[in-house]
Length: 378
Ligand SMILES: [Fe+2]
View 1 (cartoon, rainbow, N blue to C red):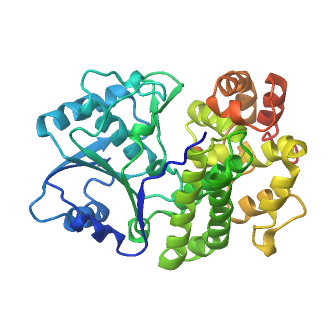
View 2: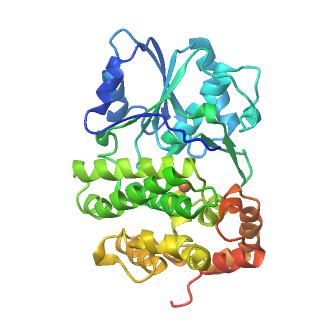
């Protein structure tokens, strides 16, 4: 027996106006300090029913720890909302999931948010996610990442009950996303689709979503990077990224995420960049175990960048969109990186991403992939 879980998804231009049709009385908007005073928050507020009372929790830092969330949780409890609206990237949406769960259940701790604990949420409120990046998939997932203050480690919390009730994918919310973030978050989405497609938990639903996600993202991302306000292309990438999120949320990720989480945490590298850099080597490593699947995905990439095998196509594509394939292109000293490879190997070996990778990877395999991004052809 298997399940497919998804929020209600509202998408396309002006989908934000869907908010005006909902019975929203007391709304907490969860966002970050950069977006707090931005156009996107004004657009969300203006789309709410006129009678709605609103509190903005606007101090979510990048990669928040639970301690960072405590003052906001107090504000939320004092306000007693009937809806949470997360507006932002993965950090804001993940924070909203946790605030929502702990507002519903003040008796629980953040570490009770696991797949095996019945949380019994939605007695007081519900959750809407409005992503302002096209990539994390958090609006469609039942996971939330929380950093441990003062530590390099990240906790991956998960419960089907923190899956948002509604995801709104309005391309106007991503039209002003800077080029670098557009590239990084879309790369993350490509990695989600590819890892999901070969995960040992893959299923017909996640397969179909991953295939379409690759088509939409790779077919439209180059146009977005040339002309940022190409709303139609933005819309397709936004939908594709969400499909990739829905795909991996219902199947799981793999070795590129295991390595990328470790590398990203150690060197403070944006998530998309840190998982993207390992993807071609992970595909090469996995290839003998899922060649038919990789070949099928390879055929979906645009003809002008497609090579005979997926690893080479990915190198071509990532190169074309300006994504680094070696660590020196990120300005990281290779000696410093090599000195920390054992920590990356250790953290990656403990990551949940490794358990659903199509090929078992031992420490030596992981080390080889980690070292494959050290430049050998400078
Ligand atoms: Fe990711």
